[in-house]
Length: 206
Image 1 (cartoon, rainbow, N blue to C red):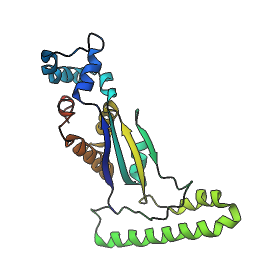
Image 2 (cartoon, rainbow, N blue to C red; image 1 turned 60 degrees about the horizontal axis):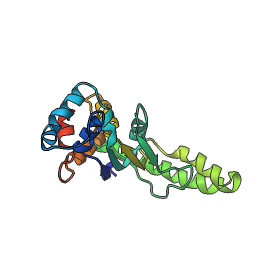
Image 3 (cartoon, rainbow, N blue to C red; image 1 turned 45 degrees about the horizontal axis):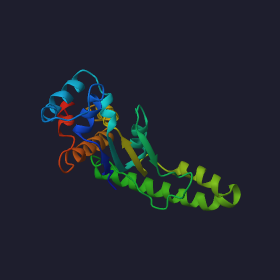
Image 4 (cartoon, helix red, strand yellow; image 1 turned 90 degrees about the vertical axis):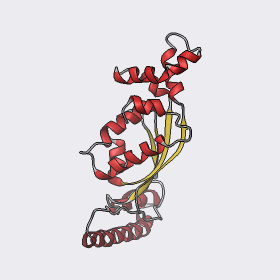
């Protein structure tokens, strides 16, 4: 199964960011001020005045391998994340990720290894439950889950934290899988109907 990204909600726009910046003077809108939004956002982004960009939100549902899960968790700033927990429920659907750039021989080896690990997970859960209790059995049986097993996560950024994430993960030296996730996220934000973040995207050179 491929890693997947879905933008399930968003709040804010270029105007939201601009009005936040104008709070220090006057939030009243005039035709002239609206015309100056692209210039204002560009100035804010270039000079590191990023607080106004915290006033929006981008909400994603992602299904990712465990390695990408770790990348989403590490070094994050103001990102809200919740995900499936093998501690609280049995992972009945054995979702796995296989790198697309692997040769067939190694794809087959990983599929075989993943199938064996997932079978052991379910066997361990069943056989350890009467010994350890259901809660502890779920906690410990998950150690059979491999780094390529996938979980579904609920991830929410504000624009400032989204830019920070992209600056870390949409880079040539980032792991391929997390880089592709970052690129999918940005692509979906760019294609929101009406382009509400058009000038913010341009301001951050994305």
